[in-house]
Length: 371
Image (cartoon, rainbow, N blue to C red):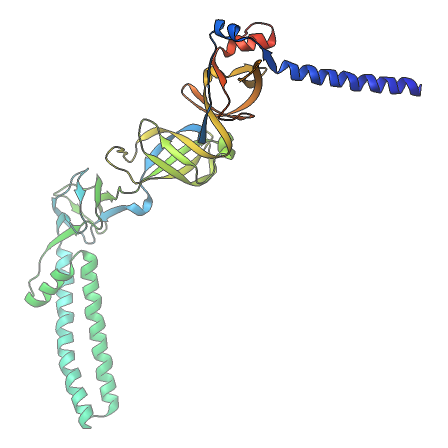
């Protein structure tokens, strides 16, 4: 019984060794140069690449929230004139609209009253200061005068800030203090340099305080919001490059969303576009196709799709050897158009069959091509 067990074990090991030898033999194709020429097989070396496309995904161009502003009226009034239209480029401080605002008259009057009170207080302040130095008045009276004077100073500053909030510039406020000439015209100015994205009012209408007039955006920096299928999120990393198809614009992923869109089961990835130039005009709201690119941490190569043969769900290439070809399994990590990015046991010095892979597969399997 024990001898039979030993014989059985020896037979099993021997069978395994034979199968292993057969498997090694099956991974090579013995073929002459004449046969290669007859089959029309052509050779080329794989091209080593440092990056490869992971997937293609749709994206939308958006404006960063810090680059977008709503211009509103700080006071109620009637719109006399609108100076900017949608698409216009504006500079910071440019007058976008003019309002007729009776409330502005009230603010100016209160400011001038505060200035006059401060002037009277300043005269009293200087007089009591001199009297204190001469010992004519008590320290308590001087303290009361100083506190009252500081109160008038605070009142003037407050009224001045209200005029600034209303839309008057520092030079306009200074001129008002000198001339005492009130005006009902309020100029609405651009807070930033940018482009008018939307006009939200019409000339001749009356609007309330803080009513929106324009939406302005600085388009020097734009984002891409990319819809990534949720099952592919594990293959995307922060820092991956994004290439816009049919454009030379590119971006870098800076954020991966944490929620799934229930309508299409995608996750939003945000990419910051590189500074744009005239050859890559992208506009907010534009929808486009992108490719996400990753740097490779191992050797990868670009080869024509015609060089790849598939069998039972696996991909193979044929590497030229002195006696024929070595059938080499590969992993396809990306593809674009008629080329694929692969990894496997090969080097940039190897010659591979780029045409005739179907014929070599038939020779390898001994069955004829089934693909």
